[in-house]
Length: 316
Image 1 (tube, rainbow, N blue to C red):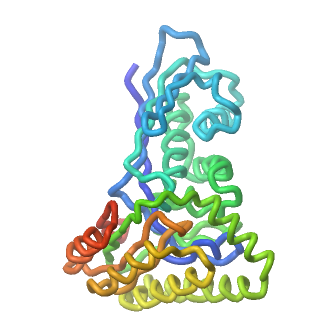
Image 2 (image 1 turned 90 degrees about the vertical axis):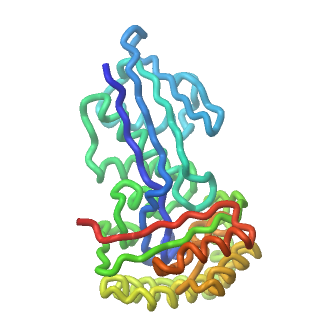
């Protein structure tokens, strides 16, 4: 039997991280320059239920049955089996690779989950539709992030720019004007779950202050949607700057992020902000096609451990 393959892109949040957990909107886009990939090879000579999972990046090479119920990769497979009312699956080996940095705000966990759910459901002859893939990946996201909003699994599954409000149907975004993002990695791992938990504690101790910040972020996200849909890219840059200021007030930026954000602005970015959980991970800069390479070089010179240039275009 031939091998089955599925892949999923990374993602970047343009606007609204953290506030999205509290009912405010957020906008995110796929980052196709990085991706997670799952390759499933049938093992017809092995007993049913003998499923081997290999993920070299995290040093994993184990049988499904040996992994605990709350292991994210095992959970992906078990969710597929449960949905199909299957106890076991034909024997196989699944190998997972990813070029998405871990704990960097680019959706590594969601991308791996989506790729694994897709490849396994296809192997069983029942390829899941995007809505179901996203719903199952969200269940796994809870292991990674505690109280996730659901935006990561949504944008990674559909691989389209999305306007997201927790608990509401996802909306795809179209911009008549393509735009370019330059991503700079601080090189500092920052698990999203920790940042989300810290913001929740801060909100509980000072709800009035944080509700004000969440509301201000929500208002600028709605304005950013209008600007994107009208092709007003420069306005989006100014709103990114404002979003970063509000995230700093929320306490989830860092010296390293602030330094790269300021570097990008001085290099000619239309706007720049942290992206994702904060405290480390990545920042993003909105660039023109002409300025992107210069901004990328300046970020690298300023200490970015990795840079990515990604162009976001209208989907036909």
